[in-house]
Length: 133
Image 1 (cartoon, rainbow, N blue to C red):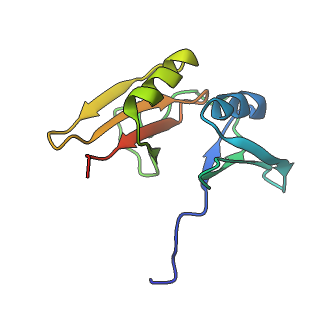
Image 2 (image 1 turned 30 degrees about the vertical axis):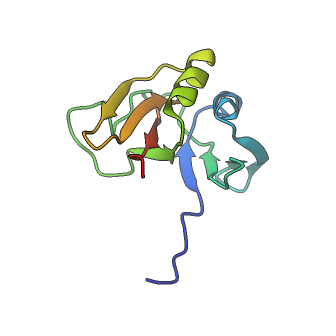
């Protein structure tokens, strides 16, 4: 479909808005609004236009285990968000300064590199630096 122009937002179900907000602010996202609506939802946006909607209805008694990434049975669904970066070393330094551990790093033969972190609800975030052009 030619009418699709870009991804508008990513929805993440979280347990606690304050924890999610504090984490994503460390990544440069700014709080826009929330909670709003029947779900309810809160919205944060990065200066690049990347928008995240936090769905604030996670069950407090639910396991923190990420069933899309951390269990042997491979369920269908979105497993992570990938944020493209242009300076791997600067991002790694920033994450270390913010005490955000990198859980895995992959380097491809063509120079592409990507590494992963987890937010407070164990949602997976990939930082993706494409090969030099």
